[in-house]
Amino acid sequence: INAIDFASIRKDFPILDQDVNGYPLVYLDNAATTQKPQSVIQSLKNYYSRNNSNVHRGAHTLSDRATADFENARVEVQHFVNASKREEIIWTRGTTESINLVAQSYARPRLTNKDIIIVSAMEHHSNIVPWQMVCEQTGATLKVIPVNDQGELDLSAFQDMLSEQVKMVSVGHVSNALGSINPVKEIIEAAHAVGAKVMIDGAQAAPHFAIDVVDLDCDFYAFSGHKLFGPTGIGVLYGKESLLESMQPYQGGGEMIEVVSFDKTTFNQLPYKFEAGTPNIAGAIGLGAAIQYLNQFDRLELQRYEDGLLELATEQALATDDIKLVGTAKNKTGVLSFLIEGTHPHDVGTLLDQQGIAVRTGHHCAMPIMKQFNIPGTIRASFSFYNNQQDVERLFAAINKVKTFLV
Ligand code: PMP
Image 1 (cartoon, rainbow, N blue to C red):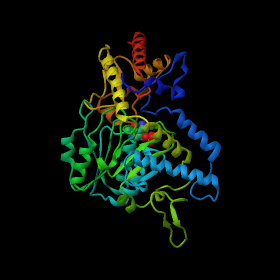
Image 2 (spheres, rainbow, N blue to C red):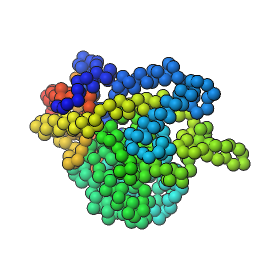
Image 3 (cartoon, rainbow, N blue to C red):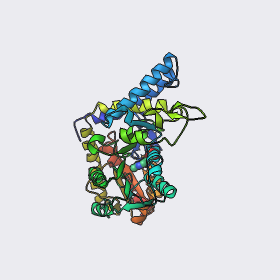
Image 4 (cartoon, helix red, strand yellow):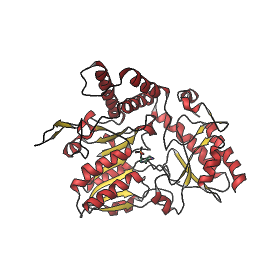
């Protein structure tokens, strides 16, 4: 479809080269987790076979090496999201922990029963439940930006919801269930106009296009390493330095302290203040390697290629009887969510797997939007740049076969 040598990119991902249930694997579950290039696997192997030790505290060479690699990975992330300072990059376990950190360390101590938190109707549970918990703890109210039948946010309703009572707005950059790309820059500007802070859940955005936290002017931005071709158990919270400085940590332990005494404990400086305990050192280094891997490509070209696959899949879906698309936003990426009339998503998923095709079925941790659409879940095919036209063709050939069994 395009100029980068996409056939050779595929060879960088060893897992793709295998048969599953007697068929060559077609991996279309990238929104759940992405596969890892050889360079990431190698960085983990190198860390554990050459440099493994604890960071920041060792008086020996291995610890110095591990610390240098761990902190260099933080700088990779800083540049990746265009943050001004390395102190603004906090390592977490993933998007979920990043959101919980902001909910507990920023929102919980500041909000009262007069305040409002806004999320949207298409959020992942991890961008709903932490805010519900803060509302329980503080008496604040959670309000929800409505979503239309196409899966787009109702921005004029959002404007109407804004007031000086709104202290926090947290929305997804890209929906994992529908693929909608939300106009977060507009949302951030409107929220700032009433003095609210904005958190962006970038779990599904970072894998598909470049993120610029300065241009967005978001207060907090979160993403997960495992959805970005890196390891599981590592993620990122970006926060504006002044906000992070003003926040108290919500987890205590080693690493995050300056001086501990039974009279008074003082906290470490940023970013360590929010990194209690031994961090996921290998994970951070692996995520750094994943970002280095991505940096060799023109990301716009990767995105165009992926969008080409999504377009092709959408055309095929529209040309197939009995398929109903869920999520038809004008601006979308990465995800084709659909139903086959007269079938249950789980049955379709199982029969696709028997033909070597990996998709996800179910509510995609976004029960509220499934409820709004009055469906139990969807079948979701999600794309990355190592997928190709043949994967799309295999998916639809398999769907047609499934239909002969089920419809
Ligand atoms: N937000 C969105 C939009 C997601 O797709 C996901 C993962 N499915 C998450 C948050 C949670 O990410 P994690 O489980 O890696 O913390």
